[in-house]
Amino acid sequence: MAAFTSFSGKTRIVANDAALRQATFSEIPIISFSSPLPELIDQLRNACTKVGFFYIKDHDVPQKVIDDTFKCAQGFFSLEREVKDEVHYKKSAILRGYEPPAEVRTDETKKADMNEAFNWGYSSELDPIASPSDQLPEGTLNLAKIEELPLTISESESQVPNAMTGPNAWPTVPGFKPTLTAYYGEILTLARRLIRLFAQVLDLPPTYFDHMFTHPGAMCRILHYPPQPPTSSAFGIGAHTDIECFTILCQGTQPALQILNTDGEWISAPPIPGTFVVNIGDMLSYWSNDLFVSTVHRVLNVTGEERYSIPFFMGPNYETLVEPLEGCVKEGKKNYESVLAGDYVWRRLAKSRFSDEEYQKMFSKEVTV
Image (cartoon, rainbow, N blue to C red; front, side, top):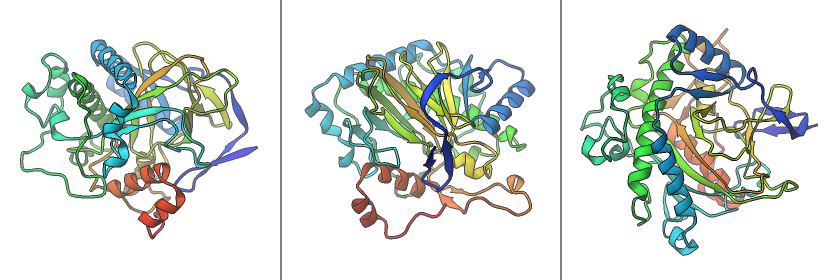
């Protein structure tokens, strides 16, 4: 029997290291966003507190925007290596840009991830609330859903400088930035709807978190996993829990995502057309004092075919102090100390992208969570 220990020190038992079967509906529920609100809140409460993973359907993100983004990803990753390396992530102070295969080690064992990626994060020009509508391709955003959110961002509001503040690194590839901008805007809008629903799950007013997500630590990635034979033990992404509040994942067509269930078994979470997979991350687990479950997961692409996916990681403004909410603390027992969002994200990213020696040079003190 093995064990997985997360960055924050939480240990989960792994009873069986092989993915034996596909998840059942009770293990990873499918939730419709068109459900009546009381029913939707109940379903989310069950999923967030017992599983940490769920599918969402009826989300209103146009399929064309999704399809265009996958085509864009396939085109980018087919480029020559020297073209992609023009925006290598180590040229960015905040690790945005292109990540070559086997340079990132998500698993705590430091086994290399067998994927390549392009990462970008929040800027006002990507935000359908903060940006003039003419900066985005016409017709790509669901304006009706944006109008449902009374959240506004003033022109004078700016990000407080921190370890994760800085620009994106865009390659000079025709159509690349506009396509990813359109996708980012749609998913950011969906994520802001979700954070309001999560507030209600926690018995808070729907707008409780709004001021913490005006310029969120919202990162997005396009990922390419090379073909691996069925006998391969090389993980596309090693076992981990996500850093931010929650992740909205578009899986593509190839099954590879596996989650660790409550029995310590790896179960498969296959792609379901018309859905996104949502999973709870560490920051929302901290905020809820472990009421919300941040579930261990990994990617093992042994289909023999290429796999593409698009995860979007939703976190609060980087200057936000994340600590257990008063309503989630029972008998004065806090499971976590306070953590500054931007510093925590930076440390987590650096931990998986630099050697232990390089990491220790960057941080003289261990992170406290």
